[in-house]
Image 1 (spheres, rainbow, N blue to C red):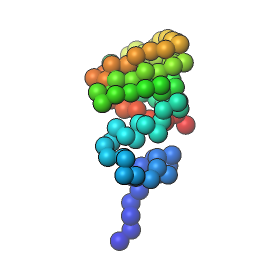
Image 2: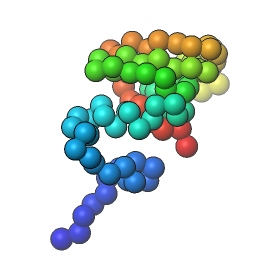
Image 3: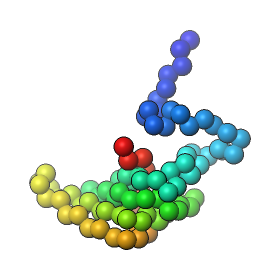
Image 4: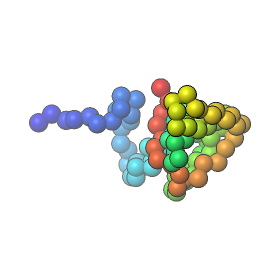
Length: 97
């Protein structure tokens, strides 16, 4: 029986350890790395992950927020030195390629 690898290529090299007990523990590997955060309300953020908690609250440095309008060309970009992202608005966290 072959093993199916469902993780993206950058995630497939992460080996489970005794300390890795919950899905949020995967975020720990992205600390001080660039991440893409998809948010509710047609928004995305890119930045360097400085911290997180069990509620998925995030602190990003060198952050860029992308707010998408109804038309494809309607994109507003906001830049911040440091930003707090409330966890209940987070849909997805991914490494930036």
